[in-house]
Every structure is written in C-alpha cells, then in structure tokens.
Image (cartoon, rainbow, N blue to C red; front, side, top):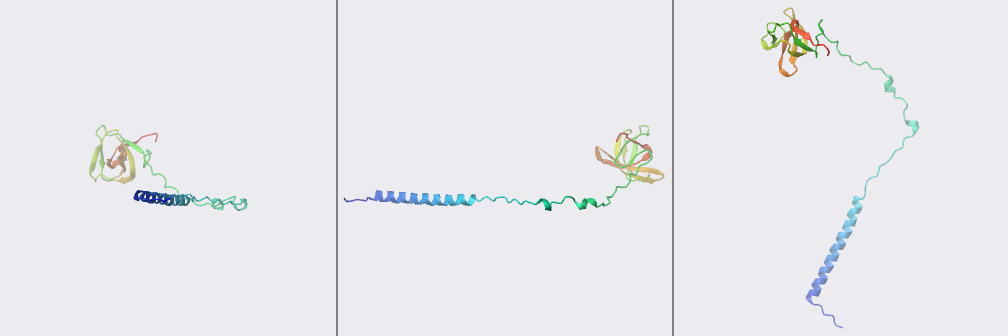
Length: 157
C-alpha cells in the first residue's frame, strides 16, 4: 500500500507537533514553578527549660531617686500657672493687658470685666505690683501681663 502525503497533511502534522511541544514545555515549566512557590518557611520552636527562667528581677530591688517638680508658685489668692482667673474689680471699665510686667510697658488690649484668662507666667513684682502673664483660652493672640489686684481665681479647678 502506498501512502501519499500532500502538503496539507504535512503542514497539519507539523502544527500538531509544535502545539504538543509547546504544551509539554508549558506543562513542565508550570510544574517546576509550583514547586518553587510551595517552599514556605516553617517556624522553629525553641523550648526554654524551667531552670533557666529567672524568678526575680534584681533590677527592681534597686532604688533610684526620681526627680520632683518644683513646688507650685502661687499668691495668697491661689493664683498660679495653669489656673484660670477672671477680670474683676474694674467697675466695668476693663483692665489694660500690657506687653510686659510693669506700668512702663505699653497696652496690648483692654480686657473686659468678667473675661476669663489662663495664667501662663508670673508672679513678677514690678512697680510694687504683682503681675501675671495671661492668655485667653479662646484666642492666643489675646496675651499679656495683668495686675494681680484685678484677678480673681476661678474656683473648682
């Protein structure tokens, strides 16, 4: 029996052989890739024997001095830094808040009667007057020095 190969049969055979070769190549590389990515590291557990676990920390037995804060400076009316005060005793005229502690400093602004401020500095004595540095809790630009004579401590702080 005589087998006749025409060109379409040869081309078809070559195409099938190429496809099979490509499939085998991809299959083998895919399996190899999966083997590489499956190498997940495993945890190592180290067991410590009970004999080597310390039962007391000797560093806790030593006493070291701790720094203490400076005593709070306050006047006889209880006014001190971080306390809140209210302007009072001006007869409704208000109080000049100055650029510095003393009557020689210029006026920053006029604080209203009953206006509340936070004490951030002082007391400083100048011109025989005790002065405190104040700031308005609602506006930090309203800041300056005021005479203690017109400040009343707000209780309950």
